[in-house]
Amino acid sequence: MHFVRTGIIPTLLLICFGATVAFSAPSPPDDPGWPRVTQKGSKELTIYQPQVDSWADYKNIHVRFAIAVKDGKSKKETFGVVELDAETVVDQAARVVAVMPKKREVRFPNTTDAEAAALRSVVDELRPFGQAITVSLDRILAYIDPAQQKQQPTVDLNLDPPKIFYSRKPAILVLVQGEPQLQPVDPNQKELMFVINTNWDIFYDAAGQGYYLLDQENWLTTKDLLNGPWTPTTTLPAGMTSLPAGENWDDVRQRVPGKLAKQAPVVYVSKDPSELILTKGEPTYSPISGTKLMRVTNTDSPLFLNSGDGSFFLLTAGRWFRAASLEGPWTSASNNLPADFAKIPGSDPAAFVKASVPGTTEA
Image 1: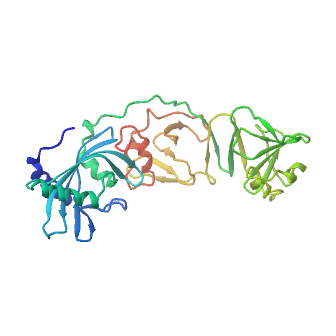
Image 2: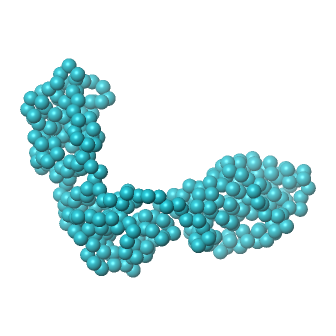
Image 3: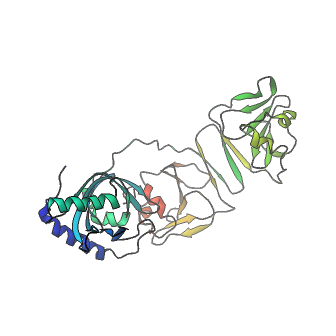
């Protein structure tokens, strides 16, 4: 472990004090700004903005803080330095970094051993070792030269697109893990069964050979689980009125016979990994300043139209996919995104996607 020699501490103090002035932009809520003062009785610890020496792989940070301590025995303020090796956790949305110390050294130049020990005890009392401290991500990045930072190791990603469904009407996506598997609700009664390899409540009536799907307060039914069509119903198999008591079925019991839906949603059932893009009617758009991109605003999906070539781009599970129309077909786009994605302004509602845009600081 290499520590800075005490001879340069006065310089460090000047750097840290100067940095307090240099960064005058408003701090995010989780970074209350600098300096930070902690008091307990007549004891006081002031921590000034950190100087970052390195941030290896954007995980392990080496950082120094100028500090000032009042030990309570006098009004004298003694300056020192804290040097940390720490792990970091980054909140990209809030643009805040939690710095969690793993090793700490506290030094007070121009003091006796006894004075330094007393001052260190005040630091330990007011700021116990291991206590995390939050720092604005932008403050840290201001110290870091990205060209000198090691890049994250590459990993092999499956860039093949999943099945991507699109609907302008109310719709639901039902995922079944492989071929549907049925199991009796009651081992002694085989007439009423349920699909065990899905996270939806789907029942099968062996007598009527029909499937019944619970969608919130409504029931839908079909003869063909995978292909539909599904229609609203309140006419359920007789066994539904006598479901066993217990947490497995309590929610379902409260929705028997349920409410009759005025109109059934579109039901997509897939045995493979799939995504559903749902817009409220025809897509609506919001231009992104300085780019040819337009964000689709009436959907919960991160969906964009590139007005330059008319292509749609979808971000899902950290991967990008492209299609000439929302009906598909979709192809991988993670490795050849338009350059405009890196130009999305930080103030734009879509700025969060830059964490998945190769070559950006956020990524």
